[in-house]
Length: 132
Image (cartoon, rainbow, N blue to C red; front, side, top):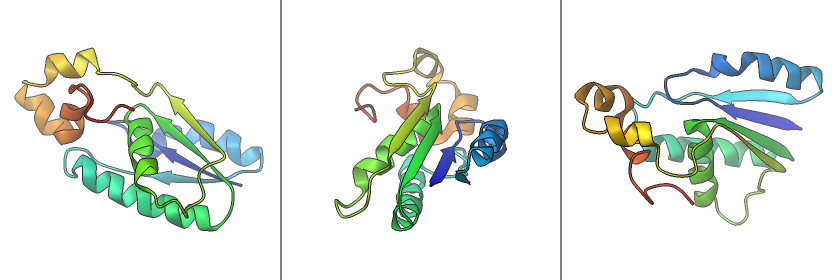
């Protein structure tokens, strides 16, 4: 079985190495998905992720692990998949927000925050922009 890890904002795929190492020891074929919110839009990341999920699904059963924004991205990408694509066996959300982030809402007007987090950071501050 395959496992895909999607990291949170301000992190990298390497941030899940300890978890992924344990999953590999347990027999899972682990993979990571990287993104950089300061240079890629939320929609572009979701589209890339949906393509990756489609490829993984073709190989059989799989599980998804999303940390923070990674879980938001996974949920958004899963909603875009055609009905013919196999859904994951499990979806694990590690600290992924399910409602508006109060920190993101406070920081949304800060130019540095906007530069570093792009539209992904702004979406975390907007009610109903992504949460379902």
